[in-house]
Length: 123
Length: 195
Image (tube, rainbow over all chains, first blue to last red; front, side, top):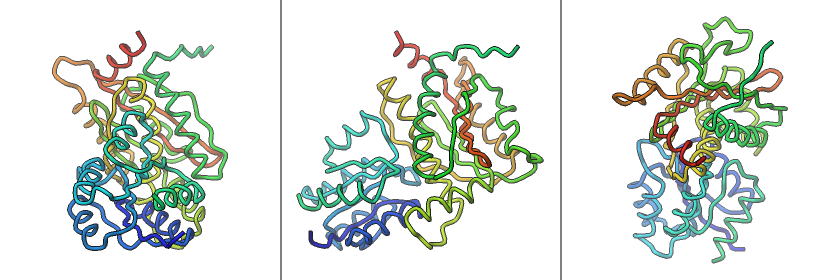
């Protein structure tokens, strides 16, 4: 598996630290992190990462679904994986229907994380 | 004799969500956590009775406030609980980062509260994205004031006061308390879902 370059959209420092470490442990790389819609779209266009991980509980009223739709509008082939504590069935379906490539519920293990990002990364 | 009543449907759902929260907390922390029976119809002024256990009531606590349509949740952790959970999470992936308790409490309470929110939402066939919480390091008096404010905000004109359930997740030395306020729309939605 090639080394994946990932953009992490996560406003919580602990979660971001954990995700960055998990990418590194799996032999991949977090190339940037963002916390809102505008910075995510700008960074995505600039860096063209292989993968985006997106949290749904972002601060300052930013809706994860809106960020997902924004990324996909900028690049319909974007590979976005949702990493969220949200376990609602309807919410998950809405996200997958909107174009998310995968969903992992927090808390997750390094094994679950690696399996998912590599599956999506190889699509 | 102290006889515990059968919980109403709303409290039973909160209890089910609390079991999921317990499962998630046990994945985060290696300690032996247990779920106390959920208290419902708790008067807001009593919501933090005996928190922290053995404390004077003057200690500062960590609190995360979440709001969702027609509902609010306040997650409360003693300072020692917050410090322990922060270390548990950081050591689980070998991090040496300087993450504050405030950051950790925000993420951990997000995981716990979403467990309860998910059960309620699925039962009522709702769907919502919980925004990131506001995290406080404040006295019990301040947190109770925030709770009182949330009660006022959730009670619409001519509506009953929101229902307050209290969830307590305990280990030998630590405790997480989740105060779940559900307004009339949720109470009606749960009753409808049961029919």
